[in-house]
Length: 157
Picture: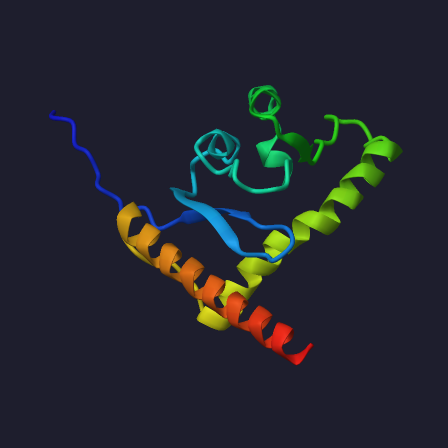
């Protein structure tokens, strides 16, 4: 009996962004399929050496020995969340450290919330190139809206 391959379109995609901490502009971004590991994206050009800040804030999916070594070699300071030890309670000092990091990291989540609420971003395309185009356009629209907001804020001051 001959083997058969099923062609099933993949409809899940992720947007990985690097934003400016002060002004919240999207500086770099990458689209991947949802099954791709988050941690490896950090080493694929997501970090911006022209940015004046050297700290990297990310969730636990980006913490690995390879990423920590990469950040150190590139001159970045790791502010990546620490993972909870398996089958043990999280130590109090790590809880406090993660809580402090969450305050800064939440700025990225505001970008995603803005994209979903104002642009109705919902990716239902077949093919990574189409998803990349839609996410890229949503990122450009977000940056334009953010710029206009900052301009209005500056004009009123």
